[in-house]
Length: 458
Image 1 (tube, helix red, strand yellow):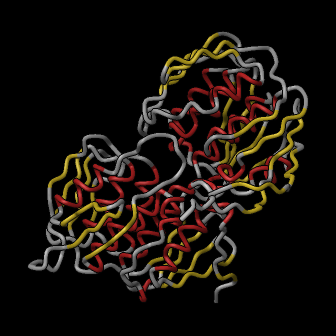
Image 2 (tube, one colour):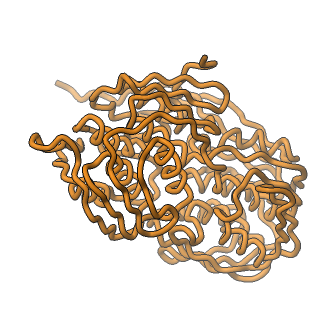
């Protein structure tokens, strides 16, 4: 039999056209945190009762997570920025590879599934290709809780031993303060028998947001915001109404947009404590930042000078803002140094910025940036979510017109990105076009297979 050619189909591949040298003004509204919303959706599996999640952004990642829950028998309705989740019909189901591979956060479901049903089977997760992001810590934690975890042909199977009705409490020490591992173990431990401790736990605001929701559901958790969590397992959790925190990464991105265009902006809602190190760096490089109302910030850039950053787990500088901040440093006075310590493949924006005229010397995970007087608009390609946002920001400040592809990445994490920027003075057009290509990649799935959750729930 002869070989079979890959199936190719025509798909829409939109791109942005960004007019540079723009000046921004006004107020921009921050959406709910994507990284909170996804794990909050997974946490709803821990109860049989109805859950309402408010302040949930409209993103392709949220749509994919919604479809994953639907495939497990969950009923989901959407009304504006609220999700109404009825998890009563939860059933054990092997999730489709294409959905799980497009969204790394789908792996969050393994803890709740295991705790509530006693078994779970999930394909290895995917997401943007910014590094290895191993799930070793997740698996180690679940095994410590007594689960039998096996990996066979990229399928992870986890079960509670037949002689046990529940997971068993354990003392767990993480090798690295992984957000995903902390959240996975945390959710599983809420229904375990006994008291679990997680040491070297992640302290990110999104972890704290999850803890707040779980406590509202009846979980007994101490230590939120610290590196040691104590979870006393309960027999069942209840439904709740919970609002996701504002997206600190989106807020940081728009604050950097103001700085790179040397524009005054009002940004909110934002919880300043979630962005303390970022606000400090923006002030250090020449921006005046003031809280004009509760959770409402005004940024006033002056002369932007070079500053150094090194990404670290919270409360350090967030890896998700490394790329946008590098775009800013490309226009600063002086030489800065930016080191990425979290993900080994998170410098995909460097070469696009160099195409625009930036002076960057990259040595493994450290970039030295000599600020230039002017960037120039080019034809650009985003390689992941945050790198795409970074080159949009650079294009706003550059001379001339830029065209930017890779919007499948952008739409995963920013709600109405160009619409929000246009509302404060940017001139950005989304151009739809058609092309023919082979198999859709993992990150692209979220855009080209958009899920429609029922609207206007009662």
